[in-house]
Length: 452
Image 1: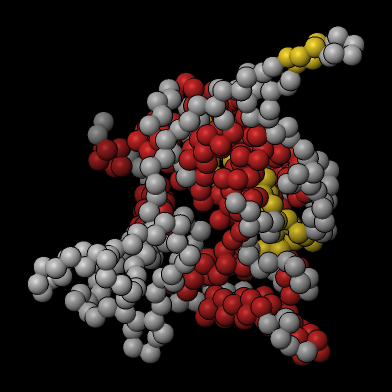
Image 2 (image 1 turned 180 degrees about the vertical axis):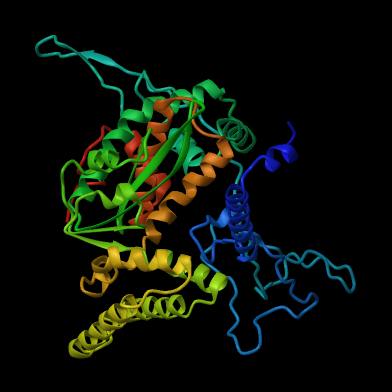
């Protein structure tokens, strides 16, 4: 029996039900096709998935220097390391020798250059001596950084970590850079072993950073995907303005954050409303306002929703008010905060018509008390952008390398990245921070001691 004959066997009520169902599917398809696409500007779509427009080309052939109305800037001359004197030897007019004639400086030009860099082999020779008084045989210890178990010096090992994890380059590219720049032929296995040897040092440093974050009042968090030995995993970050701690975990669940925090309950937790982050205990919470602004923008684009537009304006107004906290008198600031709260309640008292706006309406009613925490506590940000920015380098690393081949490699990456990002946030030289940790026995008080 074909489809036509099967339909002829159905009753009138059954045929009407099929037609109504098809009409509903058709209407849903029309609605979906009529809506604008979700982009990074009107949703939480990652920037990498957005369409990139052609950059506008500037006019060529213009004059050099500053634009009209702008002060010009040029490189300032500094005290030179090397001076090259260029003296006149022969008169251009008659050909006479003028090398013995008095000459004066009439101009100078500075060029920054890098001298040729080649690796050196340092050999530590250990001596022993007998005490002339008691006859005890005493051997001199090897200096830090030149121990027998070490193959590469701390500066070279720090450079390997810096290139592989800060500027996400695979081991093959690190090998090529060391060969081309410094004339070093280091096998891929030796590079991997250098990272493996340093793993314990960076693990201790990461634990100290984690303890610093646990002692902080305001904490933000986020996560991104990772690949370990062909399987999906998650790279988590918890961060403060001065510290960042990373952890690779097989799940995107609340127990991961509970493991990181170790039972500590912070004053404020800043997040983008992911389920695992909402389950983390905190006295107060702050919703990421830019996330809500982008979601409201989609409701505006898709439905021209007035309610969504007004709520978006309110959130942007609250952000501007938070930035002006120190500029306004306390009574005026408090008055404007109360005005924001009243406006929010008035908007939530009305249910918008469109489905997307109704979803946001329900979300804002559920998290009403977490929308404007940043207006009351001065050190609370209105966004979770710092957590997203802390993961940006990790996303690039994943795309460049394709993921991790082993669990220990993923853990080593997370611990080293904790050190790198924390040093960056504290204004420390990243390469020297890595070298300091690799050149001496680790001391928890040296760089990352916990402090409020």
